[in-house]
Image 1 (cartoon, rainbow, N blue to C red):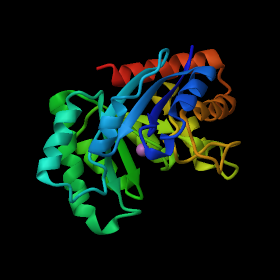
Image 2 (image 1 turned 90 degrees about the horizontal axis):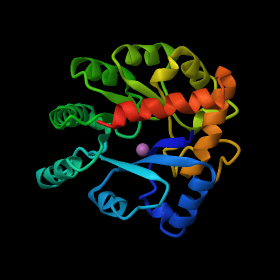
Image 3 (image 1 turned 120 degrees about the vertical axis):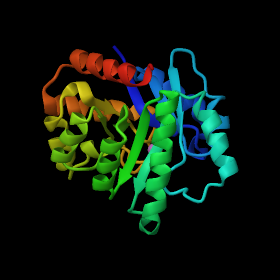
Length: 249
Ligand code: NI
């Protein structure tokens, strides 16, 4: 059984110089599935060129929460691209960086959930400092999806799982000061858990400070296995099943 990265941005300029080496390290570390997230129309073009024998790539595109001033013309292009993708995302709410556009963000989020439903594609949700509003919207417009890079409380995670959503955990669970992420992984059932890097950001220990990349997802996975006292075999089997159940529509 192999590892996977349910959320990465290897289509970004941070990987311009050495993408092939990054992909080789994925193979060396048995990371053989990855969901590549496009946050722009340019990202999508670059993603089409990413290929590697032995790695199964999936892709997602969505209008990022903060891009509320996306033109109608570009929005239509995003929707066209969504039709060829495996998921719609990342979409959601970010009140941390853009608290002034809350209402426009909600509107954009809901609009894209409706499109995802029509297209029958799961959603990949970004929520930062906006968990209650995210929850309210995901409850009202219930659809299959994942809370990516989940950073909320264990109680809230359980509520999302009750609605059927998956919870994806990134590098911060490996950090020295990690407390809440450890509560989260223990609070939710393993069959609703996913792992990701969100690279190039949020690098797990022991590589913190370096650029993140998909092969480092192994550190996040190992930390979770250790904390949950679950075998590598069982963990990987379940994580792969979760990923396939969510994204192989
Ligand atoms: Ni992301």
